[in-house]
Amino acid sequence: MGLRVIGLGQSAAGDDAVGFAVLAQLRQMGVPEGVELLEANDATALMALLETPHRVIVVDAVVGHPRIGEVVELAEGAWPTTLGGLRPLSTHGVSLQQAVDLARVVAAGTTALEIVLVGVAIAPPERYTSGLSPAVKAAVPAAARVVLARAGG
Amino acid sequence: MSERTRTIRVGSLARVEGAGALTIRLQGKRATAVELTIFEPPRFFEAFLRGRSHREVPDITARICGICPVAYQMSSCHALEDALGVRVDGVLRTLRRLLYCGEWIESHSLHVFMLHAPDFLGYPDAVAMAKDHPEAVKRGLRIKKAGNAIVARLGGREIHPINVRVGGFYRAPARNELRGLLPEIEWACSAVRESLAWISRFSFPDFERDYEFVSLRHASEYPFSEGRIVSNRGLDVTPREFDAICVEEQVPHSTALHARLRDRGAYFCGPLARFNLNFDRLSDVARDAAVAAGLRVPCHNPFQSILVRLVEILQALDEARGIIAAYVPPERASVEVHPRAGTGYGATEAPRGMLFHRYTLDESGTVTDARIVPPTSQNQKSMEEDLLTMAETLSELPIDQATWRAEQAIRNYDPCISCSTHFLDCRIERE
Image (tube, rainbow over the protein chains, first blue to last red):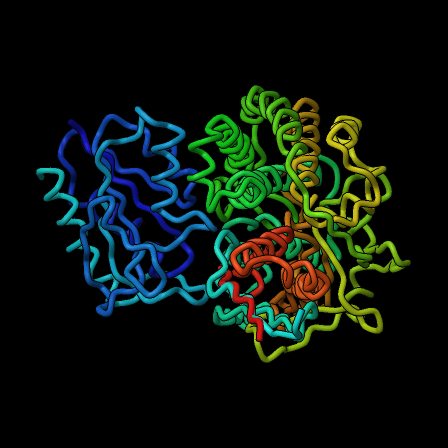
C-alpha cells in the first residue's frame, strides 16, 4: 500500500509553513516508490486529498507544546482539540480534526483508513513573518525522518 | 420576575475566523454590558508596510487573511493605483472582477454550509450536520471548490494568490484555461438554487433593527471594486472622503479597533448591506432567486444574511460565467506603473463587507504611511448593539439556548477576527 504525505499550512505565516518545509526536505532526501508528496493550505482542500486508498500522513504545525521544535506523532483520535492542549492550527474555522471527521462522513468509503499527524511544535503565529524560526527550522530534518520511518524508507 | 443579573459568556467563539470571546451581562431583561472581546494580538500590518515598495503591498496584505486575500489585494491595488495615477480598465478590470467572484464563492460557501447552517438546524458543527444532511454538505463543498478553482486558475494558487500586481496581473490566462471552469460553474448555479430552496425553509429568529447599511454602489454593477460609499441614510462619499469620516477607536476589551462614522455612529457593512443598497444591480438570475427565496428589500433581519450570501454566490457564479464566455486575452497583462509621491484611497467589497485601504508613497513609490479598515472592525459595534437589542429575548431563554442564539447572532456577520487583528468564547452573566 502507498503513502500520501500532505503538508498543511500557510507559507506566509512563519512557522505555520513547517509542513511545507518538511515536504521540501523529503524531496531533497528522496522518498521510496509509492510515496506521494502533496500540499494543502485550506482544510476543505485537505478533505479532497484525504480521499485515497493509501495511508495518509498530515504534516502540520501544532501549538500548545511547551518545547518549540519538538516533533510529535499522533494517530487519529489522539489529536487534542481543546484550547490549551496540544492542537494542530485551525485553518479558517475548520480544524484538521473537523476536516477529517467531515471527510469520513461525506466521503465515507473513499477516505483513507489511516491518517496520522506528524506535528512540529511552534509558538502561535502572531504576525506576518517569512521563513521559519531557528528552533522550528532545526526540527525539519527530524520530522522528515519520522515520515520516512513510517514510509519504510 | 426579580431583577436578577446573569452573564452570557462564550469563552471561545467557534466557527468564526480567528479568536475572540463574548460576554453579555443581563440585569432582568436589560443588558448592562455587551463585550465582543478580540484577544488575538494585533498584527501591526500597517506599521509593517512602512518602508516597503508599493510593488510588495498586494502580496503582503494578501497574507492578512487566508479567506479573503483577494479583497486585500484588490483594495491595496486600487488605493495604490489612485496614488500613482494609474487606471486599470478593459479586460484587466474584468479579470479582477472574475478573481473577486471566485473569492466570494469560496468564502460565502464556507460560511453558509460549514459555519452558519448548523446554527439554524441545532447542530454543534458541520460534522454533526453532515451526518443527517450529507448531500447538502457535499453540495456546499463542491460549490466552494468551484470558487477555489477560479482563484487558483487566475491567481496562481487557491490561497494567497500570487498573480496580482499593481496595474493588473503578472500573467493573463489563455482562453482555454478559463473555459475549463465553465462546467463546474454551470453545475454550481443550479446547486445554489437547490441550496436556497433548502435554507429558505429554515426558521429565522424574529429580529429586526434599524441599521445604517453601508456599502459601495456603482453606476451599473453589483459592487466589487469601485463605486461611491453610500448608506440608506444619505451617506454618499468617495473613498477619499470616507477616510475622513471613518473613526477608529480603541476599546479596553478588544485588541481590534472599533470603527464608527463620525457624528453618525455604528453601521452595518457586508452582504446584507450590499443587497439592500444594490438590489437593482443584481443580475436577473440572482434577483429572481432572491425573490423566490422569500427575501424582500429592505431586509432588516441579520439572520437572513445566510440567504443573502447564497444570492451573492449566485450573482458571482452568473457574472463569472459571463466573463469567461466573453473572454478574449489582453495584449498585456498589466498597465505601466511609474513611481511617484502621493496618497491614494481604495475601497472594495470583501465577502464580509467593505475593506478600505489608504497608502502614502514617497517619490520612489515606497510606503510611508498605511491605513487598513477591515469589515469586521466596522461591524463590531453593530454586533454588540444587536446583542443589546436582543437582551430581553436572551433573558427569557435558558442559559444554553441564550448562548446559542448570541453566538448565532455574531455569526450573522461572518466575522473574520484574524483580519481585524481569530474564535469566539460566549458568556451570559445573570445576577
